[in-house]
Length: 239
Image 1 (cartoon, one colour):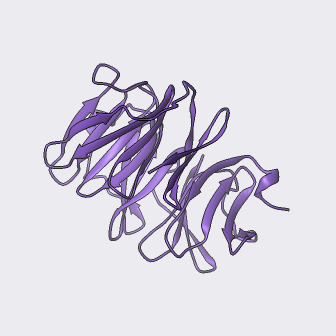
Image 2: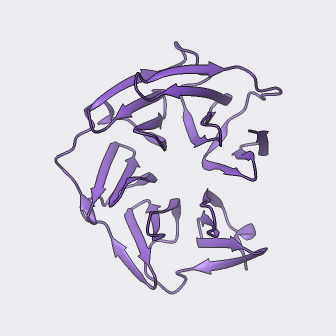
């Protein structure tokens, strides 16, 4: 048994750690050429929408009924977020950002911080998240990209009117040189972002760039390449 026989929903890579693979049949890891199951005997939903490491290498799991994290052999449930969590990412020490079908939620000290509101995204379906320097880039379903400075509660929005190929942004990852790769509903988009001004410079240098739909959370920066899953298979892009 291995994730090859499962519906693979997400992947996460951190240097010097096993690659995490979230499926509709549980959580897996890949290390030294072998697959192995994680938390098989622990109680948490085995239909996983996203997975990530935090700074302490705890494993965070996003599911259709909430958010959990694994610390050694113990599973912890995050309070006040019993809903479909589409994406989870670390934005600071003890701070995780959860994307949902109804906006963003900040998780601090194992619970949702209700004091911090993300009003521009309160009714948005969040598909992807990326922490880049002092900003957070949010990909949505149908509304394009939002570039946020959470500490200052400022943002800027980008859509097909500004150069995106599609307003559906399924996946986000940063290359080694700081270039951002966005898997959209109509191909891959590359851009540079200036954190201070939120300005985006779109780079139209991907060739070939098939017009196809990328899969949610199926993107990695690994071995100097961007690995991205699509509805038509796996694509690799040189960084």
